[in-house]
Length: 461
Image (cartoon, rainbow, N blue to C red; front, side, top):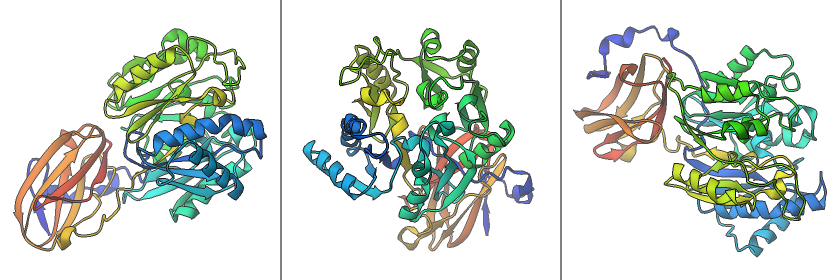
């Protein structure tokens, strides 16, 4: 085995005590990362009746129409009759079925963000489904059918599932910045209605182990304000790793946040203790009125938007502030197109776009162990995550020119190392984290100018 030495590579560190490095196994890809598809649970009449179902159909048709230009859409239908009804709705709206597939699973309701599969990557960059406990937001709604959706999806996809039913957790309860920092409210996670037998420290350990979280920004929240007990995704969103989208102080108070929580929010810092940039968007100008004329008596939030590969789905309310919020969000994502989704009828039932969508990340393991033109095989760096050093192994089946390229979470190249011509055989490199900040990085090799599969590494100093 040859050890390559340059500014990042030190042969002497092969004797480092790897047992001292953090042995984290899973990480949740951030929403802005490449998706394979989006999951939707289509409304039906079996729990809340035909009017409920019919009042929501158009929102689901509009979301599906917007998403198919961006990625696949995986639709969960209650039964075959509902599947056929949905196909009829899509056909009537001239929505192509080419990138849509259907899964027949009975559900209680539509909130796939909270009850559905959460996809994470293990240390081999393989996708795994997490199956947290789901109890209808603290036994406030029917949940038995929705609770088993992650199991049903894992069986249908042939994907490993990790049973985490010992902890109740909903996907809309947290926001991630992509570099290991989480923001959430205690009222929707640590409250006794969810996890009476777990301490906050134990909950944090679950989230660290299975979602890759290394810094916790807790707001207290207010239990009982609405069915989710103040999910964070109605309040704020990480637009990227250094920017938070939220509302101004007055609107946050209107939304129900405590002033002490508002101060925590605006004082938040990232994993490097650097303050976030803040972008504020308004609430609706007027109280929301449903499409069938019922005034709900309260305003709507635009923070609950969903980031797909090429589009951003933003909740709209037929309100003068729709255009203002859409324009602000569009500026944040110049390479994606903002599409307003009418959520007025959905909002009557307590949620918006982000609540009813769930991303499935694109797998980075496709062909991961296959040689490029029978010339190269790349293995996952180990340990991963790491605090000081990690080793990357690869195999050359012929003499080749080799270059390692490393990118940050924004896709910007942060390091390029040219090894010139290397001989046939096994090789490894030892990377030193000294020149890097904490966070998630991707890397690949250029072998005779041809790109290898991409892998991720996580630095946690």
